[in-house]
Image (cartoon, rainbow, N blue to C red; front, side):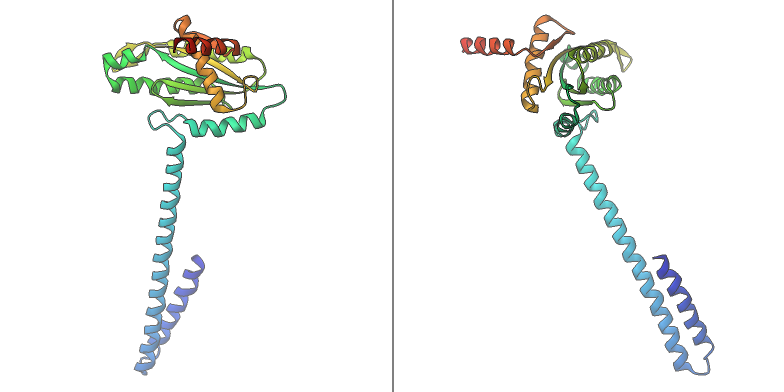
Length: 247
């Protein structure tokens, strides 16, 4: 585009000067003046077309980026959603060094419903945003925090060398989320219960692992608030048998 401007403007100027120097030949002068104006008009139209194409391209890319972001992030908290979790899980499994595991932490806030009922959904939303901030602060850059919906979250912890590392992260999260939340000048408190499943020990299918972590979370809830429990296949069999008897 700069090349076009540098070539057109001098040419148009030369044609204008040529026309001015031939005032004694009106037809000749008018012809060169008209050619100069036409050349400048074409350049202006070209510039306008380029600007339009550039603006359209930027708008298209921006829209594409926004749609991609909406597809992968929770609109309230800005956390990853299931789609981004799935992508991160596949990458973590693929890149896991020999002997390392990937931990899936299933989190559920204890007492959040009471916050919503007593203080309203806007206060509850503010708390969820703060929970998201604390979760991001608790994990490493190679880990991922994800919101499933409501007051349920998942943490993907990569490169776990020993289950103790997963438990340490879970305990840290419990401590940090248990600190009071100041919302609209009011101190509010919740706790969090966590269930953990490990890949590949408990499987390599993400949905199956999430189900295992959810089953472990159920055991945590049975023990009381602010508890951590690892998935145990024997317990899962027992729960399935009990459910079958109940029906």
